[in-house]
Structure formats: C-alpha cells, structure tokens
Length: 317
Image (cartoon, rainbow, N blue to C red; front, side, top):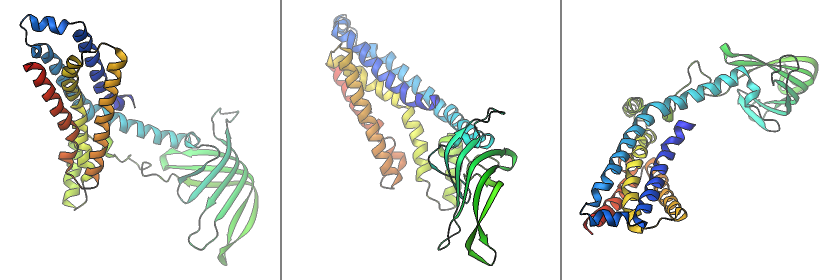
C-alpha cells in the first residue's frame, strides 16, 4: 500500500513545498532582489524544474517495477492467509460467498484454547443452492472448526451438534432432516486468485508485461482499452511531479503569498482539479470516447500549458 501511495503523495509534496518555499521568497522580496541584481528568474526556477523531472523519472521506475511487485506480493500474501487461516477473511454477522457452491453465515468467531488460532465458529449456517426452482440445502450447527489444506486450495469444516437438509435420492428436489453430532464438509475457495499461481491484474504488471498482454489481446480481437489506459496512466502519473513543479513555481511568485494556509489551500485546489480531470478522462478512455494515449495525458497537457504560460509571463515581465 505504501509504495502505491507514493505515486500520489510525492507529486502533492512537490506542489506544496514549491508553493510554500517560493511563496515565502516572493513575499520577503527575495525574488525582487534577485531580479534587481540582473539575474533572470528562470535561472532560479530551472533547478527546481530539473529536480521535478528527476522525481518523475524515479516515479516511472517505481510505477513500472516496485509498485506492481509490491501489489502482486500483497495479493499473494492475502491468498496464502486465506488458505492457512480461512477465518482471517471471515467477518461475523455477514454472508460469506468465498467458497464454491456454498454461502456461510457465522454469528461469532473465537480462538481455539489449545492452538490459540481464531478458527472456532459459533452458530454456523451453510446454504447450498441447488439450482433454479429447487429448494436450497441448509446446514445448521452450533459449532464449527476450520482445518485448512493449503496444497489442495481447500478447507475442511468440522461441524458439531447440528442438522442438515439432505436430498431425497428418489426425489432430488426434496430434502429430509438429518441430525448429527459431527459432520465434515469440504469447501473450495471460489476466487480466481486461488489458482496454483495467482493471476496478475493490470496493477500487478510492468510496462513490458502490459505491452505483451495488449499485443496478445489485440491478436484475439479483445478490447484492450483498460490495459492501454492503465499503461498510459502509469506514465502520466509519474510526470505529474514535473507538471506540478511547472505550475507551482511561477504561481507562487506571481501570487506573492507567504501564508501557509493560503498556499496549502491553493495546492489543494490544484490537486483536486488535476485528479478530477484524470478521473474524467479515464472514464472517457474506458468507454471508448477517447484514445487512451490521448485521454490519460490530457490533465498533464492542460496543466503543462497553464504552467508554461505562467512561466513565460513571469520571465518576460
């Protein structure tokens, strides 16, 4: 989660820091003193733009390598947790449909006094739909205990003191009640992640892997808009650090404000506007109204144009 958040927090930090630092210099007339010395203001801002570009290049590497690996590793960990300790993914008082052909409802979960594992279920209800126009099989037990079998991607549930609706062999559409003291049921995790190898999502892929899948899907006439959109989003978000620096540097000097609240408020408005545009153009891209190669770069193009105009105005004034 932390590497993923850096994609957003680093550009925001760049924007805020630039507004605060240059805003302070401008309000203290330091910028005026520099100009009075015959130094072009662009020479002061240029190193900041270079640092913004370096940060963007760093974010490209992070978005391409670090974040996909971290995201994929976290998903694999969640799958392993679910297999080793299925109750870790269970929430009492809710219907759980994570298992093939079964829906579970558990009133409470407690720890096993011997193993100290949180795998004891109280007041368990298990529903097994039989298909259209057929009654649902129901199993009710006072107590249940999970036993995981990770290598088979299954778990066994040991139920005690309950009843089960068993189908009539002569009429499968009807059931008869069966009381039991101990009853075992095998549950298979119903999740595409629970394969021998966890399947990668677009967020888990590097740029090279995305390009490969785009090529394969294109050959099969499968819509590649989501993949192409995500590919360009990786790059566009990385360059947002440079774009924010390009906008913030001249804006801080022009507004001539040193108040932290004012600069933070300005940064907040810029961030909101940028990400609203990003979400809007992403939607247009996914719906096929705009090419992903254009739509995902539009926020950068818009803000880059504004920043360039402000920079030109500042340097020639």
